Length: 309
Image (tube, rainbow, N blue to C red; front, side, top):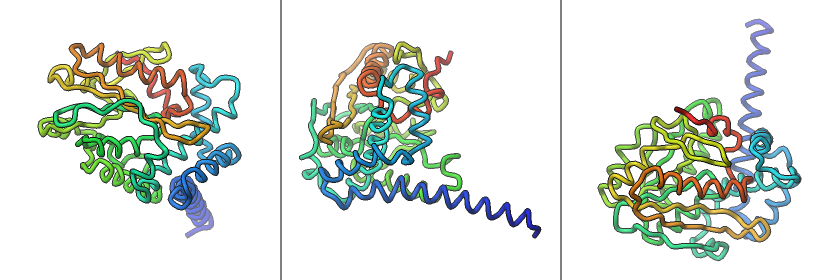
């Protein structure tokens, strides 16, 4: 092997090691601290590092800021916006470790609940967004009568190539979702049969509705921030056709106290798929207008804000 070939191997090994080390720190070590500290103390620590450790989730946060500015969702204090976006990302990852080490009673003391779950005992949809933190909302739903498998993208694809640590983290997190709901995950693509089977068994199905349009086969238009976007069409149509009630839920954070804020909005049975779609995404529109930094998809905004014919 020549010198150039050896140098190439060394460079690839270094780049791979750098990626793995970064993933270890960002998805395991720092979020995992939540398993060791009382939550109130941990939240103060997370606020401090979210403000000062600008290298944490650097690329994701930088692109998120750039896209959010493009849609007028940042305001005058960019540093504060970045701190909040970094903090929400960190807490979202930390919830996996909190779930594995805390009881529902323990975390409920740090949670305010607005609204009530509906649809238990029959087929229903529970819809949410890539906003805030979802793990404890899932556990709360299960403890309040929901029997709800969740629809998630299978852990594969380009994001997992050359990232062993990240792959282990995502699979462990998915296991936490299954434990929280006490139901197996329905993986997509190809998950509609699982959705229909769960509904036939009189279960409630959790779906994250704000997915990039290139991951959805059939779309219809909704409006976010005054911009037309293509959003999933099959599930709202199924809900209308089968008379399935829908509940929209999401969980945010009080940036001052660290208390989680769970919001539950039953929409009931709707008779028009477009109205149901518009009503659902009106919630996301308000979230983006009032607390845009908590949306996890800003870095993928060019894939999301597309009006596909």
